[in-house]
Length: 396
Image 1 (cartoon, rainbow, N blue to C red):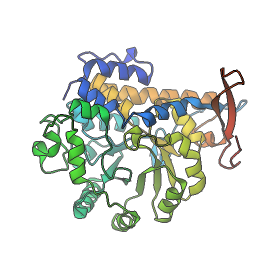
Image 2 (tube, helix red, strand yellow):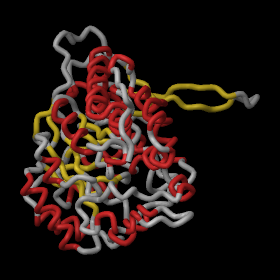
Image 3 (cartoon, rainbow, N blue to C red):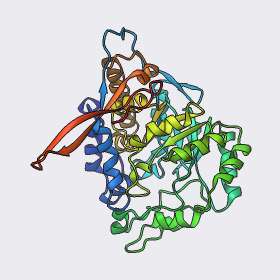
């Protein structure tokens, strides 16, 4: 576990990337790699950013944006912007207060905080902070323990359950294998009884102890029948995270879920998977309003949030940047990350001619494509592949 930088001056940070550079200076290399890394050759990790960077917004003009605001609702709850925190485990790795500090930042920003199954504080401790709290569930080999965690989340006052469906086991994350990554004794999965005696704390050269622990705990047998049973057994809104294929999105909607998170797990599961933002429009079209659709993986700015809204999402999940802020400046750093994101989003909305998140769906989105002319020289052009959801899809 590491502490945040000794001094933190909020005025030194003007973009979320600034926090990543500051976090790099204070985090141990193995922890930095655990947070920043992806699976395999990290193709999907890189693709998430490249896909966002290819997208171009077509702004609208002569619209009154004098009252531009980013407030909206997610899963029926008011929030100050269409953003929730992504579920991230073991946040005490980057700061002693971990999820508690991050949840306080979310509460002050008036956005939902998502508690992970692998959180280093319990759902009861985190919910007591006072943020709107969602609980993320990994399906465990012991099914009754899974349902018990959901009951605990309900009793703690959580307002949604988010079932992650893209981790039958943890993918090979090469950085962690090279580092022989292992949790320090004072960082535990608080919802698991073994504590510091778990497999996640037992080092072995060339292995990830965390991957070994999850392989023993997570159920690779998770199926649609389990989703439907979970739907029957919780009164809370149910969200399924990790959907990329429109067919799966339709099945999820038919199973009665309240939301879908289009996500490739931040490039940490199947390497070579499609970038989440590239999958978003088709999923939204397939679902056709039957449930909310959120976007996860690669969000690094308010402009990215706008792009996701323009392609049909009702909101996004923010992951790694919150940890960079936590590492760089503790709770204050996490708050500054969310403040900057809110400022960037309002700027992007207003300059695009949108008075709020709802009007972002009227925007057209273009995609830069790279090709080569007959001489083999690279050139770029822009195709406007997507129109708004009510106008349909335009062939590229």
